[in-house]
Length: 264
Image (cartoon, rainbow, N blue to C red; front, side):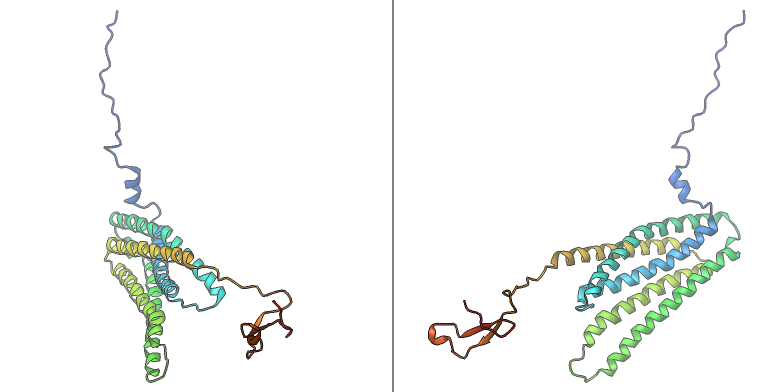
């Protein structure tokens, strides 16, 4: 009778602690590098534009820049909410795409010399430089306009600098910083970690600022009471010149919209 032998072959059990986790693996490589690289450059331009627009909307809401226009009073909070939501969604996506593409560039030698890398980079660089130039022109326009108003009585130069110059100069700095980062990419220098961190901090700060501004304005807005005149016309107080004062009246006569006196 054959002797029973025990199988002593060790069974290898794969532990999740010894392997790379799914999240870590996905953040350290890209399966669609060209597509994600295009998305990364697109988000760089879009988020810079959202930050510049958010500054403009926030300052306008703080200073009441829309005036008494009821349509703009409705559209301005909607724009602020849209910018806030877009930043909440797109800023984390920018951080993820930046990390994935940077990790993949290290293992794909020569990718930065390919056309698929250079076209999105130079396209984003051109858009950011154009936006920076337009914002700088707007800021300088305010400076020149303020010089023409020297000596003009009741010229609202301070308000103009606050509502127009300040958003324009901040937008110039935002687009300039983003353009500098993309320019470094075009030269083969990667500063993506620092750039994505700065954009994340600015995006969170802008989203929180706009959200708090909307909440404060919603709580401060109150409907003004409207007095309803008596039926038959509007009540117009006229100085009676003492016609009723001798009779113990108040000296003020009230007439309806047709000019007929109202008796109380």
